[in-house]
Image 1 (tube, one colour):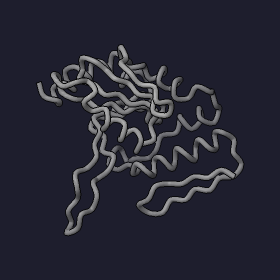
Image 2 (cartoon, rainbow, N blue to C red; image 1 turned 90 degrees about the vertical axis):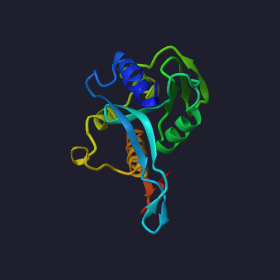
Image 3 (cartoon, helix red, strand yellow; image 1 turned 120 degrees about the vertical axis):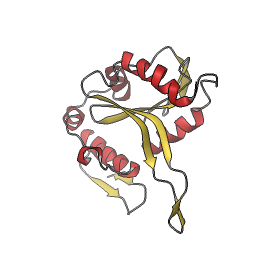
Length: 189
């Protein structure tokens, strides 16, 4: 069984059983394109960065899932999963071969096998342990993507998320620096 069949026949149903794509406000984005690939000249690009899944709940990207085919170790895609979660500024990441799941909490460094994927609400509560009225309001506002035809680049999404988090934390002054094609830098004053 190849990776695509493993995802379709095993991982998709596991995610649905946890409520992903079933619970209102939750979405599963398959083959999520993080970057288009670096420009190499003469109109050529390097290989794009694509993660197998991004789990979204209440308009927040909460987890990355990197899948490998049955027969490979369940941690085979762990380095990829961590790199993608870091680039997208997502707290939780999972690597799987559909038989076992390895989870990582990126900021704390806690990692290990998990029995099943957390539900959207469980992952939301783990990500945002402290309730915040502003975050609740922002979660109800979707980012415009013209029906999926286009979306923000990963660093633009990160910049927006960082600004909303600072506002949600009731900071009175912020400076957002985001040059075209660069990562954002956010400073609190």
